[in-house]
Image 1 (tube, rainbow, N blue to C red):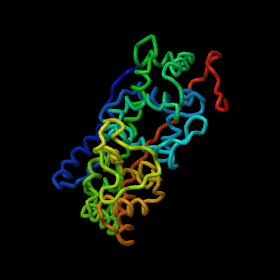
Image 2: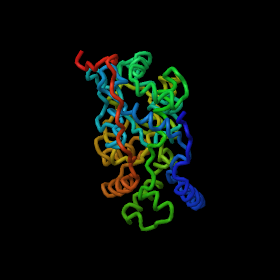
Image 3: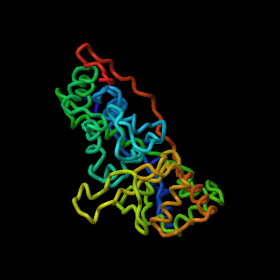
Image 4: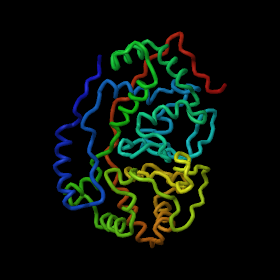
Length: 333
């Protein structure tokens, strides 16, 4: 059974943790990203295949990577994603990068963790539009998958719990450490320009760090969109209230991570802000009651671009071929 749990970059982790102690002394509201200390290699490799495999969708055309493109910052760079039969999604696809650092998954936090999230899109009629039962049937019809699942999990039957566990374990590796800002936090004082550092000071003094803090620079709380003035959303999503049933949670959304934010446009839950300049302006006015000058806005944007870290790099998985018994894709049906 190939389910070995291995340390991932122990030397790098140890170095980051040691340097992180220095950061803690400085009491910065943002901390460096630390790679996961342990991963299950068998599950990671299997989860990587499943992440890229469109056969988990009804059309045989949509994969996890369709909406969370790992070549594009872990998102799709459109306002709302394209689902089965070209349906327009109701909400902007959040990045999958550093998603393991979130307190919960989805904008409304309805999934407690990556494993709970992974099964949602497969069975969502507006996304991959399949069912868990049919998806398992597809996997069981592919001999190489049946062998790999048994090797990794030690069971004769594939189930959705194994599928979501493998995808989650792969997604756990999708962190982006060593941004220029992280280098600055860890002591490399020339990693930021004077303009970028001024932007960070503005980011702190203006109150942005009240919500955008921690290693992910967000992702660790739910906040109302439109604190000082109402936000007129182009999306019907009502946020956290859809989960809790409480009217007080209406229009409360998970604060997005700002890691790699220059790559994850457009912004907000409805994707209404096309540029970082626009996003900073709206957030300043509606959340902080502050109108940034053009120069202040440019400095904050310059700082935000220093949060782009090292992108995940790996060999693309070669997906196992379908058998004669595997249903063929029919995206036009």
